[in-house]
Length: 214
Image 1 (cartoon, helix red, strand yellow):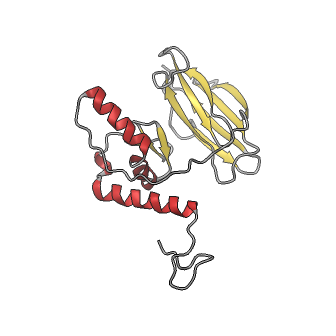
Image 2: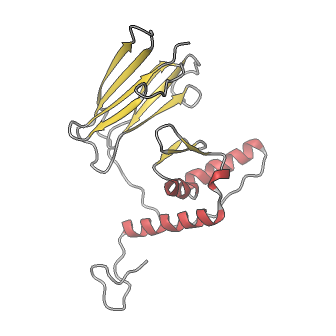
Image 3: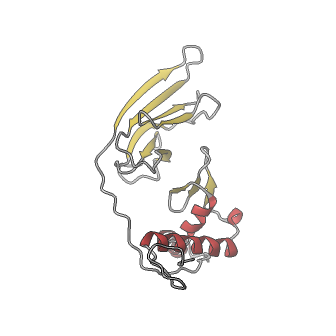
């Protein structure tokens, strides 16, 4: 890192590095290390989802780009899950080298659940059913964009497994994650059948899911 142009730096000196700068440098080192040692196309846990973001199927995390995913693979959570899977399956799993810098976790104070509205719809011609979710985030972090994902009944641990249902999760800091239990039917991803929209003025996140007729 170039320390000479920071505030408080002397000519020829290292400057004052903030914790945010150190964290950014650490993530960049991890990303470069992963790029050099890992072919992301051969990673069995790497998946690009239907909304254009990336998922780690091992840790069930979402990432905005490949660099973010690669940095995640160097983190403690992913490495720990790899070790657990290795012990469970009795197979060799590639574990990438980790650096162990002092990490200060980001503390986010949750302010409760967001308000929401759910509207059931049915096409009078085709009989196709759909759900429209409207979630209010009036005090959302300005650097955060709401996101959602569909979770199978086997991924959750709050209720007994029932394959008749699946869950739709909504997340946006500093609000708590909320989930809706919906029928376990195939989602129609055709144009106009499945969409999401974030209204930055009204602070309302809208998602419509249409289900295929069985």
